[in-house]
Length: 291
Ligand SMILES: Cc1cc2nc3c(=O)[nH]c(=O)nc-3n(C[C@H](O)[C@H](O)[C@H](O)COP(=O)(O)OP(=O)(O)OC[C@H]3O[C@@H](n4cnc5c(N)ncnc54)[C@H](O)[C@@H]3O)c2cc1C
Ligand SMILES: NC(=O)c1ccc[n+]([C@@H]2O[C@H](COP(=O)([O-])OP(=O)(O)OC[C@H]3O[C@@H](n4cnc5c(N)ncnc54)[C@H](OP(=O)(O)O)[C@@H]3O)[C@@H](O)[C@H]2O)c1
Image (cartoon, rainbow, N blue to C red; front, side, top):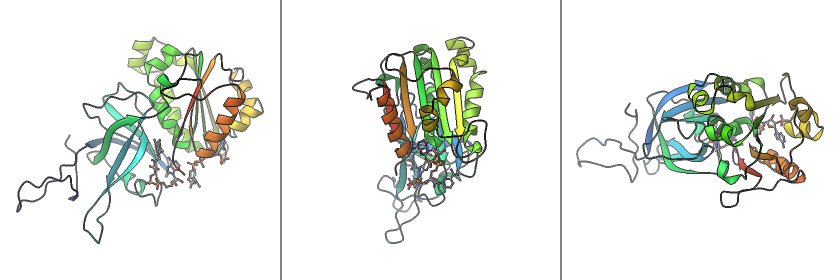
């Protein structure tokens, strides 16, 4: 499907084939939206075509964006680019993203209106620390997310290596409201019938997963911040696992800044050390958004 680029973005990169010819936008890094799903008035996911040359490790992020409005002074339009975790696994033919809608956000005020056939700018330079390579071998892998911080784990949960490397995967997802859990809950439920993973990893691989969704501002079966639930011991009792230990447990954290900092401190108190691509350790952390 050819990208539907509606306007005439004038950038330095726009080739003009002839002085009198109509300018045909040929933006580099342009991909085509193939599917859009809305979950709440603040959350949606979408899929786009994948550049043939793009290789990435499940859990990494890229820069994506759209053309901004015309600058009244110069008449030029510039791309508005933002970091986004790739929510699809490394083997997927397409790329999936899970996104917030910030009503006055430069990018997402526009991005929330995309439809199949539209163009999306994608810079094919994946990076990030939420990757298997940044962790030492262990038995139990924890994914700690708030809000859209679930996105990198949506990728890693569909990555065969996750189940090859670990006996148990614990996913905690803390959101304000129930509707904000839908994307993650549906994805985890869908793993049971994922033909490729069942074939590659073996039927029943999904039984390794322990899912622990909690809400903080709307009634749900489990209320509270994961940090508080761990401090009180309630989370460990509910999950039937002991508190984290550096010998057996590995963790990846992706949430707002305060959450990341609080959880880092807790994991350090359990004796886990922070790792990086260049220095694999027991846990890794990445911000779900800048603030
Ligand atoms: C490494 C990294 C990975 C990211 N991955 C994702 C992702 O997978 N999905 C995603 O939706 N966003 C992600 N973000 C945030 C993203 O880059 C943008 O900030 C977001 O798309 C909003 O863009 P904007 O231009 O509309 O508003 P911005 O001007 O970028 O943000 C405006 C305000 O909105 C709030 N905000 C921004 N992003 C979020 C969010 N995700 N959840 C809750 N509040 C937010 C913050 O208060 C921020 O100050 C990531 C950010 C980083 C640094
Ligand atoms: N979610 C909404 O319905 C909503 C609506 C309008 C605007 N916004 C704005 O959008 C921005 C992002 O909102 P968001 O809900 O996506 O993300 P968020 O504020 O980061 O909250 C996501 C979840 O993380 C929890 N949390 C926050 N700090 C934590 C910490 N230190 N330790 C453990 N858990 C923590 C929150 O619990 P608590 O509820 O206890 O904080 C909430 O359940 C905010 O600026 C917000 O004002 C959100």
